[in-house]
Amino acid sequence: MVYEVDINIQKDNEFITLQTAWIQALNVTECRTTANELAGEIDTPQQELLLDIRELEE
Image 1 (cartoon, rainbow, N blue to C red):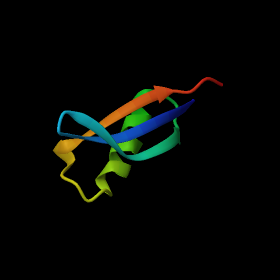
Image 2: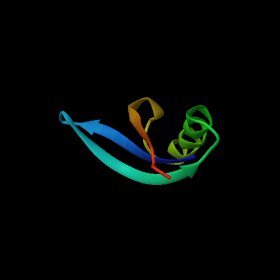
Image 3: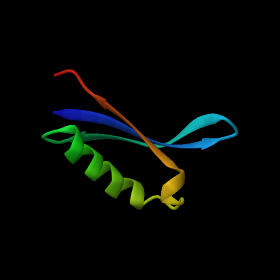
Image 4: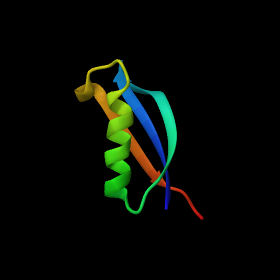
């Protein structure tokens, strides 16, 4: 399955997308693991990042 993942940060009561990625994974758990690895490369404290994961239609 292919998932679209937005890595967001909340600032002043709005969400700002820092990065968008398409991730191919067997399931959403595997997708979340990969997305967390990508988020770890962003120079922002991990606890401030929010993941928005959507399954794309095939």
